[in-house]
Image (cartoon, rainbow, N blue to C red; front, top):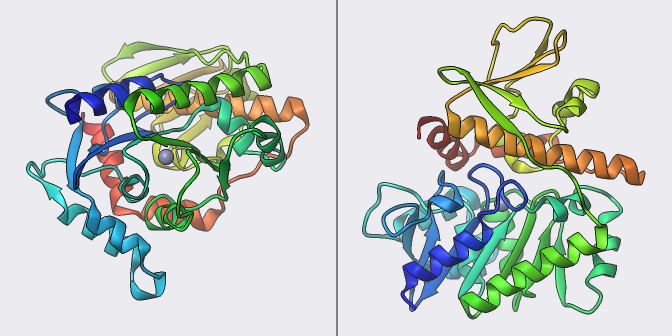
Length: 330
Ligand SMILES: [Zn+2]
């Protein structure tokens, strides 16, 4: 199978929004010799095609960097980023996913997603034990929350022969394997197992109705949650929430568009003031977060959040800014 066709197949298997990925989140890669095709930053998984949405990287130097002790790198995150960007083969218009580091140290095929059904458990204190019970017959790893970039990649490199199923707290799932077929089958099996175990039947759908140029009304069964619990968005439950929404939301009694995401408390209308692709990313992230909150509140579980210093760190990252900018302009 041609490498690019392999990457497209892996990407399409993961591009089920918003159930598996939201906005430009999630990424896929395929290794062929010393080269690795990886989803480009700022693209949605369904946009990976024969002509766009991917970057080719010479990946062995990335592996070498992550096998070193952290103390050998004065600025590990910046150093890894620079090293990754120096390894781009051919067209340098787009940058590889900011999660290139962990893709490099894993098997031939890698699918990384932010599945809602996994994050129901990964965003709660009780979730780890539940995951260990659900997957008692499989070898899995559950990593604590780590900032995407060097620190997450390093933790995955430190797993050595990493289990084929890796859960990331307050973030998502990674599966990897030798072949495209086996990796897609594993991804599907993990999701099916979680859906069955949790009996997850959340209504994740929504509508974005264009009101005027770049202004969309968001309609969804879960939207009420954001009106009844307006403090919800002041905490961050997963990195993409910080990147895509962050502090750019406003509650008020009029339809004046103050920022990207506007909740009118008098008529309960939610308006998204952004280009379609950004509005879609916002709606998908809001849908995912609503399910996480509703599920855990119903279960009486304790929600876990991304620490504030990590949120600030994520927002300060060059790569994330780049991704935000791309989502805004495309
Ligand atoms: Zn991720």
